Length: 123
Image (cartoon, rainbow, N blue to C red; front, side, top):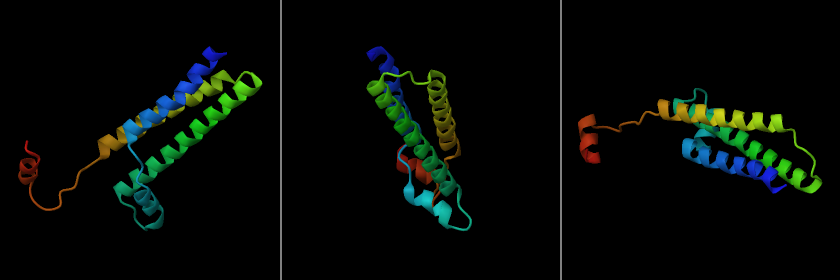
Protein backbone atom coordinates (compact mmCIF):
# COMPACT_ATOMS: atom_id res chain seq x y z
CA UNK A 1 0.00 0.00 0.00
CA UNK A 2 2.86 2.40 0.73
CA UNK A 3 4.26 1.85 -2.77
CA UNK A 4 0.95 2.83 -4.33
CA UNK A 5 0.76 6.01 -2.28
CA UNK A 6 4.35 7.14 -2.86
CA UNK A 7 3.87 8.50 -6.40
CA UNK A 8 0.58 10.33 -5.69
CA UNK A 9 2.18 11.87 -2.60
CA UNK A 10 5.32 12.93 -4.42
CA UNK A 11 3.61 14.36 -7.52
CA UNK A 12 1.92 17.36 -5.84
CA UNK A 13 5.17 18.23 -4.06
CA UNK A 14 7.09 18.12 -7.35
CA UNK A 15 4.41 20.23 -9.03
CA UNK A 16 4.56 22.86 -6.31
CA UNK A 17 8.36 23.02 -6.47
CA UNK A 18 8.23 23.27 -10.27
CA UNK A 19 5.66 26.05 -10.04
CA UNK A 20 7.78 28.02 -7.59
CA UNK A 21 10.87 27.63 -9.79
CA UNK A 22 9.17 28.26 -13.14
CA UNK A 23 6.62 30.89 -12.18
CA UNK A 24 7.72 32.44 -8.93
CA UNK A 25 5.17 33.85 -6.54
CA UNK A 26 2.10 35.36 -8.19
CA UNK A 27 1.62 39.14 -8.19
CA UNK A 28 -1.91 39.48 -6.82
CA UNK A 29 -2.13 43.25 -7.32
CA UNK A 30 -1.15 43.06 -11.02
CA UNK A 31 -3.46 40.09 -11.59
CA UNK A 32 -6.44 41.88 -10.06
CA UNK A 33 -5.54 45.05 -11.97
CA UNK A 34 -6.00 43.00 -15.14
CA UNK A 35 -9.66 42.58 -14.23
CA UNK A 36 -10.26 46.13 -13.03
CA UNK A 37 -8.56 48.29 -15.67
CA UNK A 38 -9.89 49.08 -19.10
CA UNK A 39 -6.83 48.22 -21.17
CA UNK A 40 -4.55 45.81 -19.33
CA UNK A 41 -0.82 45.90 -19.84
CA UNK A 42 1.29 42.90 -20.80
CA UNK A 43 2.53 42.63 -17.20
CA UNK A 44 -1.05 42.58 -15.92
CA UNK A 45 -2.02 39.92 -18.47
CA UNK A 46 0.92 37.76 -17.52
CA UNK A 47 0.13 38.18 -13.82
CA UNK A 48 -3.49 37.15 -14.46
CA UNK A 49 -2.33 34.02 -16.29
CA UNK A 50 0.02 33.25 -13.39
CA UNK A 51 -2.86 33.57 -10.93
CA UNK A 52 -4.94 31.22 -13.05
CA UNK A 53 -2.13 28.67 -13.23
CA UNK A 54 -1.57 28.87 -9.47
CA UNK A 55 -5.30 28.37 -8.92
CA UNK A 56 -5.25 25.30 -11.17
CA UNK A 57 -2.20 23.95 -9.35
CA UNK A 58 -3.96 24.50 -6.05
CA UNK A 59 -7.02 22.60 -7.29
CA UNK A 60 -4.78 19.81 -8.60
CA UNK A 61 -2.90 19.52 -5.32
CA UNK A 62 -6.15 19.54 -3.33
CA UNK A 63 -7.58 16.87 -5.63
CA UNK A 64 -4.47 14.73 -5.30
CA UNK A 65 -4.48 15.05 -1.54
CA UNK A 66 -8.20 14.26 -1.47
CA UNK A 67 -7.58 11.17 -3.60
CA UNK A 68 -4.78 10.16 -1.24
CA UNK A 69 -7.07 10.52 1.75
CA UNK A 70 -9.75 8.48 -0.02
CA UNK A 71 -7.21 5.82 -0.96
CA UNK A 72 -5.78 5.65 2.52
CA UNK A 73 -9.17 5.50 4.20
CA UNK A 74 -11.09 3.20 1.93
CA UNK A 75 -8.26 1.40 0.09
CA UNK A 76 -10.25 1.75 -3.11
CA UNK A 77 -8.48 2.16 -6.45
CA UNK A 78 -8.24 5.69 -7.75
CA UNK A 79 -8.69 5.89 -11.49
CA UNK A 80 -5.07 5.71 -12.49
CA UNK A 81 -5.36 7.02 -16.03
CA UNK A 82 -7.32 10.07 -14.96
CA UNK A 83 -4.75 10.84 -12.28
CA UNK A 84 -1.83 10.32 -14.65
CA UNK A 85 -3.48 12.54 -17.24
CA UNK A 86 -3.99 15.32 -14.70
CA UNK A 87 -0.33 15.14 -13.64
CA UNK A 88 0.78 15.39 -17.28
CA UNK A 89 -1.63 18.27 -17.93
CA UNK A 90 -0.38 20.26 -14.94
CA UNK A 91 3.22 19.59 -15.94
CA UNK A 92 2.60 20.84 -19.48
CA UNK A 93 0.74 23.86 -18.16
CA UNK A 94 3.68 24.69 -15.89
CA UNK A 95 6.13 24.27 -18.72
CA UNK A 96 4.17 26.47 -21.13
CA UNK A 97 3.45 29.18 -18.56
CA UNK A 98 7.04 29.24 -17.34
CA UNK A 99 8.29 29.53 -20.90
CA UNK A 100 5.82 32.36 -21.58
CA UNK A 101 7.00 34.17 -18.48
CA UNK A 102 10.66 33.89 -19.38
CA UNK A 103 10.22 34.65 -23.08
CA UNK A 104 7.93 37.65 -22.68
CA UNK A 105 9.68 39.33 -19.77
CA UNK A 106 11.07 42.67 -20.82
CA UNK A 107 12.82 44.68 -18.16
CA UNK A 108 12.04 48.36 -18.26
CA UNK A 109 14.66 51.03 -18.13
CA UNK A 110 13.58 54.00 -16.08
CA UNK A 111 15.74 56.61 -17.75
CA UNK A 112 19.32 56.31 -18.79
CA UNK A 113 20.95 54.25 -21.49
CA UNK A 114 21.77 50.60 -21.85
CA UNK A 115 25.44 51.44 -21.27
CA UNK A 116 24.59 53.10 -17.94
CA UNK A 117 22.56 50.08 -16.90
CA UNK A 118 25.40 47.75 -17.90
CA UNK A 119 27.88 49.81 -15.91
CA UNK A 120 25.53 49.84 -12.91
CA UNK A 121 25.35 46.05 -13.03
CA UNK A 122 29.12 45.82 -13.26
CA UNK A 123 29.24 43.85 -16.49
